[in-house]
Image 1 (cartoon, rainbow, N blue to C red):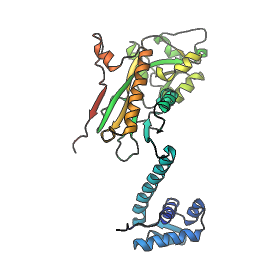
Image 2: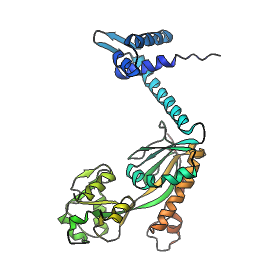
Image 3: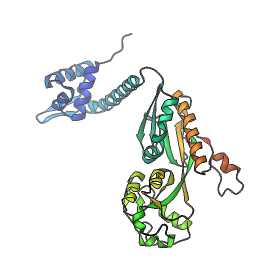
Image 4: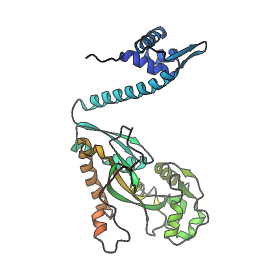
Length: 330
């Protein structure tokens, strides 16, 4: 039986006109004449048997039906466009993996290692989108995500990658002739804050058994990458994951301001919705990423779940290597 579908050209004209609330702007975007857009939309309204726009002296506005239909059409056209680009990118082979990631972890740790993934899985196209905070997968295009935290994330499988160790860093110029300072001396310097972790400095000072009267003061930055750049340019002392500043430390752009034991704040996980666990590109990425994470932990003396669990003097239980979190009952 023939599908009851309007033409793609009519849907594209309607989506553009609905988004701009203007036939003229839609015509300019689509490289059509205004009359051509009007004909496409008139044909679509005739096909549907209802009005999508109200024509007024000042232009056009969507009807209630047009508003709801426009949202659906825009979403479906986005999906078709994305799938088309994915197919073109992989030329019909391999697969596509849509990955969300905390931004600075992706740029500082993941991206420098991706060449080896491309060699291991040349037919898989990996698309990365920054996501600062955890989210629910339902209704998103993502196959997996890299989260910092400990969950739980309902309806997912979480695979432990590595612990995060926070260290205070600054430009060597900030300390002058000093190579290190004691926690009690931090009050003489400006503290750089991370917006999503407002109590990070307080926790660090508590771990050093030092009271700091202004641990919540100082300029705030949304991303660790911004915090790191501010520290490099001598604007203060930043408390950041060491894995994100290895290059700056090696190049002498930053130094560890205090060599007291670093604070473990969060863990990094690869998180995937349960219905994606058998997705071939995800499966390939899991194998590669867990091997990379294990190698990094070994090189930098960080505990993997197995190593931490095997230590009798472990201060806290090791996070599970893999865990599933079911959706809560409604």
